[in-house]
Amino acid sequence: MIRNEKKELKKQSFEKMVRCDDSLLSQINSHKTEPKTYRFIPEEDLCISEGNPNKLKITSSSRLVAELLTDG
Image (tube, rainbow, N blue to C red):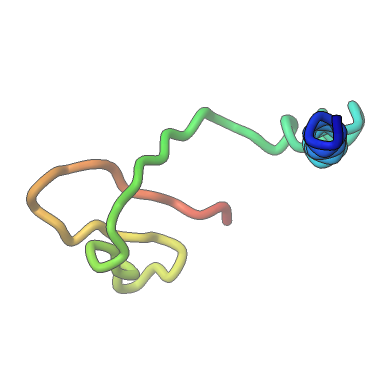
């Protein structure tokens, strides 16, 4: 009985955490210009691109993934 109550409590707190009010959601969506795909890249394979501090360059040649651009 106590176990189920704890489970329900966790579920409720999770729902509160992920619930998002519609105006906030539309604000977030209005800032998206194009869909971006991110994949895990080991930290040691990343470096800041010279001349452009907003651009991350992937130094690993084992697998070409993508260039990640920060907003700006």
